Length: 81
Image 1: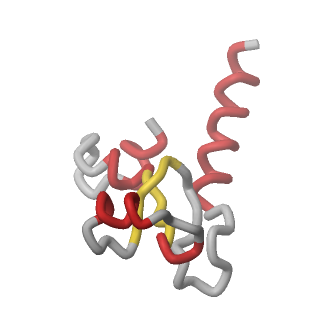
Image 2: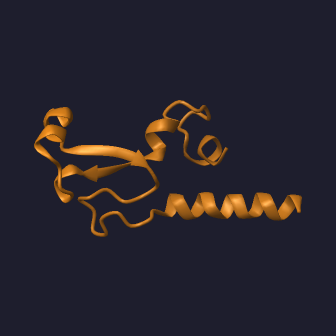
């Protein structure tokens, strides 16, 4: 709901999946030769999380979006308790 209200350009859920995925530089962890074949030359993999990209000034730090969503969850729970 936070995505739809605050972050969606058109108020829909289009783009939500991409919005929730962070980037991980595959060179930042050890990968076997067998796994490199599966990656097919990909530089990044995607995972669920609201973290800064590897090329930012604070790589993999939590983003303001993460804290916005945590605050929304807290407010939602507080209202209904």
